[in-house]
Image 1 (cartoon, rainbow, N blue to C red):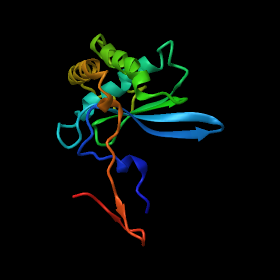
Image 2 (cartoon, rainbow, N blue to C red; image 1 turned 135 degrees about the horizontal axis):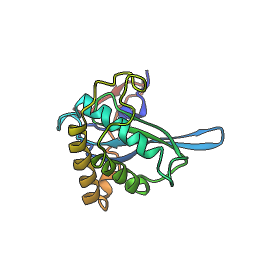
Image 3 (cartoon, one colour; image 1 turned 120 degrees about the vertical axis):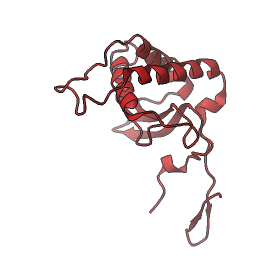
Image 4 (cartoon, rainbow, N blue to C red; image 1 turned 180 degrees about the vertical axis):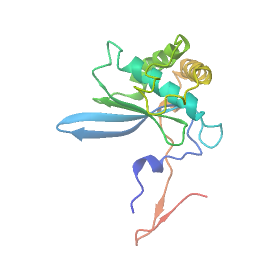
Length: 174
């Protein structure tokens, strides 16, 4: 089977940042999927599952209530590897254009005293939250983005080069 685009990113070289994962056209409208990478894959520990769950709830609530962006938000959710999130927006924006939104969303976690929607009626696993560790990760990531917002590396995916033979076999870097 053909390797999907998100697996063509060299995860040994990716750093925390905001990256365009893909741009699709749906019913004549552009939709952009962003990789919001919070930790370095396979280098730094993944985000604790309970903290990731809390970040998902808090940041999703922030994004869907942001006056400028709320009508553009399609989806916010965690990556299975627990190193970041996917954000899907209507339109096509450069990652740098949404950096302020992401910084503000993660900064909002610090002032949160209760995880929104963390009840049996509103959440499928309402007991699995960790606001304290979520705040730590949010502060760390927002500080990182703020300090590096002028560095193009946090907005450009490192790509893996794949040698493809004439008969279609792929060889990967070692």
